[in-house]
Length: 308
Ligand SMILES: [Fe+2]
Image (cartoon, rainbow, N blue to C red):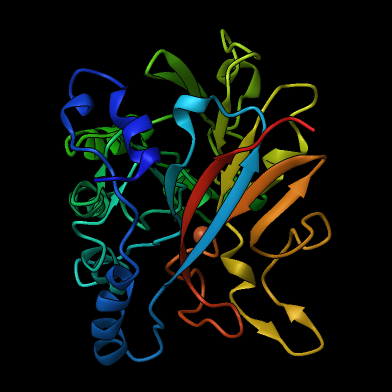
């Protein structure tokens, strides 16, 4: 971190005994994704590499010791094979550094590839730890012939999936919270299951959470940001929308069912006065095509500001 005052402020971060041994984080190199992207662009017809989208979020509730916290948000890989282009995109991120890595769900299309994803995520240096939540595609297996909507699908074993990530040091948060401490200042990270498939339990997730502590919520489905009620959340991180995936001129996204609720398909926005960051994701669902909805990973920095 050298002379970076934010880096010095963050030097005392600890999370748990394993992750606290990680080195101090630096900003995500801007060339990391691009490097992987070049490979993708030449090897996988129709797959456009993810771009790195950067946001700075000013917030008055952020403790001074956490000022300039960096968060890398990766979502919607939809890995369905060992040579899947989203894995190549993650290869391009190897060695990148951040304070907090959040994988916001829809990571795999089959449980067979959880380990492949975990291996790649583990190559990103996240000083405070790497965390994941599950999306609807992670939780659901093969379609079945009967039943309405998502009930037509098999449900995968989430503990088995979680074990696949845990083997690589990535902690899954399913309706639970962890508290991180830096220089005596606390930060709460809450993760919920996917709302679309009925696995989001906000009461369980917020059980024991202290409303006076700065709180980040990871939820695959950004719809969750509308359902928080009076719960205190300082930032929600989501994916799911794919930025619309296919967005026609004058018509908009074809696949985005949430467009009537979210102010926009992806990016930094505010829902009921709370900041929400939605990644457009890396991969695709349904048809392997994006149009007018570029893939991304989000490099977010939280900036402490004085209360007005
Ligand atoms: Fe997705």
